[in-house]
Image (cartoon, rainbow, N blue to C red; front, side, top):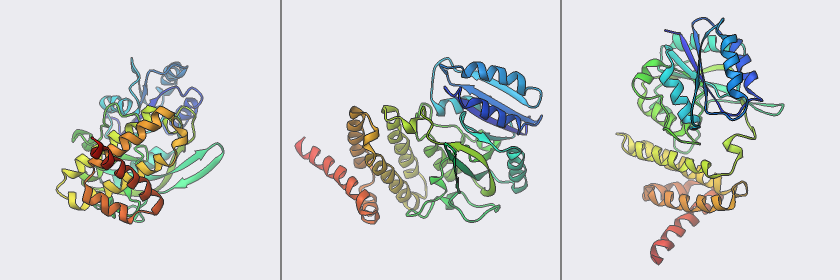
Length: 328
């Protein structure tokens, strides 16, 4: 069994894949496994991965998996999870990269702590600019209860730091069904995943370890494209609400889920210029329906405590639902 499996989906990233693969080589060990998933790329990415597999195989264990159809990031990660053999698992995106030696430090830390999973800070890169983003938890290198890290509702917490690649995960979580993503989600795939992890895992820790470089602003990224695929955030947060409502601690945890969902809807509504006109209309319609599905008492409490700009956007959606019902 490899000590660590690194699952890396790639889709049309021929410009960035060489940097990603070079960083894997600088982190390679014989007992590490790199699971490279080509999600039906249309450029030279498949050929780059096949060449890299030959070059990396002398320093690490390597699998290259090719999808016959494009399934999106969540599906590609699931393909990697199904193939991975490691005692520990982590993720990397095909246009990001790692600092040399980072993976060894990551594995050493989670082994010493003995917890289910660990979370790390990361460096966001935009062109040549670098910004450090921290896990929103002050206690470091200490085993904590994941459920308690979901709250408080009105502050940024660990479930808001929804980056699967910022950490490592023991295989027992995979065996318990906690590491797979909702198949087919094209965006916000990390949101139901991180909530499930924090509700159902037994222990975690935050490391003072910096080594993941997240490339933001890539033209092919869905965060830069205002098409209908981005609307999958509705399906992702509906899942968060539904699963959290079924939790024994729903009374405590659900207000946080509702507040986060509202904040994300307001964020998308405030940036409608990036959307194609037909998708912007879909956004408003689907968001209004989502507001209607939320627990209304909790929604009212959330709107009363949000800032005026965001609460006004959401109240307009709420009135739209009421008006539509009255007309019907």
